Length: 346
Image 1 (cartoon, rainbow, N blue to C red):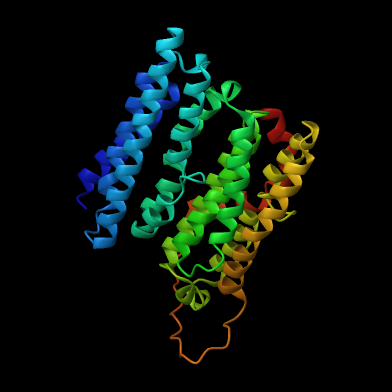
Image 2: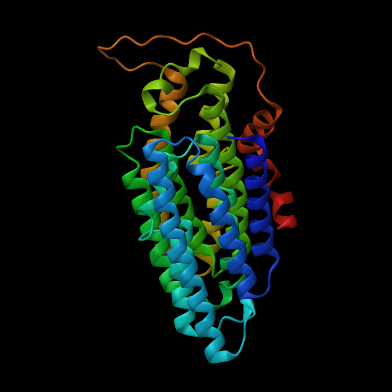
């Protein structure tokens, strides 16, 4: 793609995200979401592969439907209450429609079917934008309207997302699809705590974005797209693959690593809110996603499983690891001891 065009699309993404995050009026928030959708479409379809065009079409149709629902929800609320302010969403029907619209934008179950397909059809860098930056504006809208939303509905969506995100990722061999299902199960954790402690939702989202960025950038450096190529990638950059192992285990939420922090705080908050059964259920469901993270981690560094096909080992590169990957992987692995400081900031 032409560098100037690429710059315009990235700038539009940042503009759309900033407009939505900083707006108080529903129409401005909707405008930001539309700018975002239109700016990401050329980035998804830039390879001109039929799979990429299909992904861009699916993304456009889903996001257009979700944007229409956001507009419909805000208009219904304005009709009944005379308020266009985002924080003044009080009408129950509007809250219900908005929850569905944002679930569709984020890829929460049962509106999740587009997300793995779109991620599979996109390049790794675009997949990274779809998994992190594109989820920030809808998250902000959820954060601003959290006091009005229905906790029962969100809890059901969250538990279904954690269950299906873990279960459907089990038999995948394409890494982008595995990361899409990982994103869906993480969104479940964010949704379940939204009504009770919205700041924890944001903390979870930020840490998820850091860890996912580290994984995507590492995969982009080693040019790995499926498990069979991941098996031989350790010869290319052994130290980078070791950090990828730890980052994947952090995404899974294992205790000494950063990813454990949001899960720990969410379980603690749910228990305080007398929701111990929901906390137990979502914790058990996260074991499903732990399985495919462990499989990814196993393929990353440990050994080649027995096979009949001969794999060609890749040449080791002497190229130094980029500073961004070094910082992100370090943060993804070592932030747990700094949790008291993080909590004072949050």
